Length: 233
Image (cartoon, rainbow, N blue to C red; front, side, top):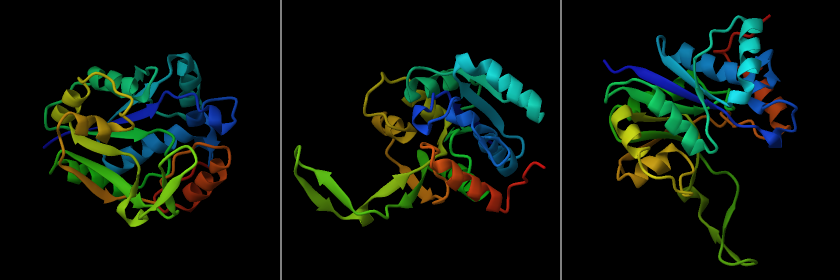
């Protein structure tokens, strides 16, 4: 049976969140955001190996948070200047078999449910990669010039979430490619390596990425109302 390794990306500075500390350490529903993200994978897949990509400058902050909350830290890997480099660092740091499943997740998406995690894992076992998505609800326009645009059919588009899942052999080969600005997520890296059997699975609209200060209240409300979350007293 293939093992599952979850890479939690928590190396960003989170400047748009208007906080004195990186957004992954902001307190939501009683604990730092990234702890909710890590715990979600541990609940969904007992025995999952977790690896956390961290900004080396915040290592002591994280250590103190773990002591305060009696939280078992994942293996830590130093992040890079880009998301691509951070994921590559994590892949290079793990030991895995070719068919092991790697789930890559944004640490600032704490409202990730077990059903989505398991759906991504199970689909990744059958194809080149699995991507959770949700329908686009806003109207969309495509820019055709500096001041011109045309309407596009939103039903043809999906908003991409994490975790994204891949077999280790595929993901490690893809991340051996040179960096490209076109790499916006792991699926785009894998696709550039020639793996085109990427399947979409149903995501969760509540699985938003905490980006702006206003997102904190939304995320906290979702966590407090989630049936699968056990809040700290």
